[in-house]
Length: 461
Ligand code: 2M8
Image 1: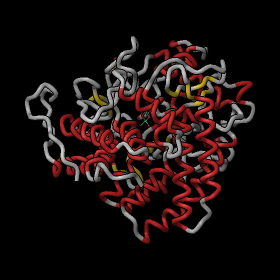
Image 2: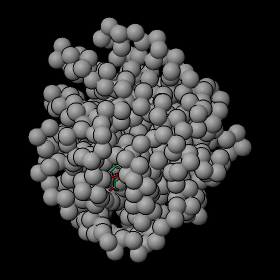
Image 3: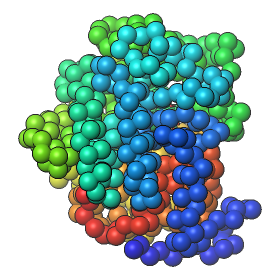
Image 4: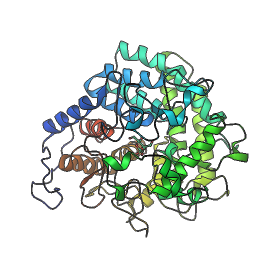
């Protein structure tokens, strides 16, 4: 069990008025209450207010948390998500709950109009995807709570995970170099990251477009923490272009306004193949092709997205052919690839340990989402500075995979302290640790549980 020094009550890191729990038992209880409160018959909503449907990569992280409390729900969560998989293999980034009003979230099911598209499921969904962390999560959840029931569920999920990979590695290989492209910042999961500023600025749009719609996010969260109206107008313009072509992926290079190879998305793609190799072995399938694909993706990621002059990974904008300049936390995430070459592992450790991110054996706060020293670092605006539990959890897995248990302990301790002090918020002020966004956020609870209850120095599954 992890031991950590909880910040004493009344210290300057305690947000005013917060009644945060202080010991391991009450932290587990808080995480359980958060997940229970967000459970919705066959899935977990990220947040009751801001995100009242099922989100793709949220469900993957959440399944890891359920594996600690109710393994049956871990498998129900992943199964309900994959029940909405499209015929081409894409796993939609949102699965809409028909019992929730269309107006509860923007853009809602009417906007996406998936029912009119051939190959879409009966349930309304978006047409985009999110980072494919599901195989990694399924394997992790299985290792946390193995059973006959879990093995059978894993076996049923396997062909669907394989189909998801096939979609991403074929139809989305727009650059033709073995990496998947994202077609919208929402597909990155780090929607508002400075990494997308340049490619997004090239998308024609006017904030006035939004007069035709009603943003729901700024009803539930401070507008100063969320993307601007102009960003949202561009988000809408990109979806409108993709939807007009029935979410098809052929000829994207000739017609789509946003096409980027993202380091996190592709690191997840490669790590998924490594996880699928483990799953295949467990259920009696052939792990060989997964291992080969994992190696190919890692090589392509290093060739295409590693910049030796900055010593970190950057997204590549396929519209210009250039790497985007911002040094965001995305650059650290290829560490989750088990076969990342030592040179890039070392470079990531240097970048992570620099004042930009502050990774250390003893660290006050987890990694921020953007370079702390950058002029456009914004500690309150989502994905432009605040700390997030899921990204820290992924980097921590990478540290364990690459033989850095002491750094993993430092990072894990800072993650647990953050939630022990502020609660299960969506994200956190990277300096004060104050909770931001939704106050009862599912993946924060799930990954807090996972970090809290594991032996921090142990090698990863
Ligand atoms: C955020 O994204 C949605 C759009 O998908 C939004 O801003 O409305 C992101 O943080 C994303 O990574 C996350 O999956 C989603 C739900 O938690 O919220």
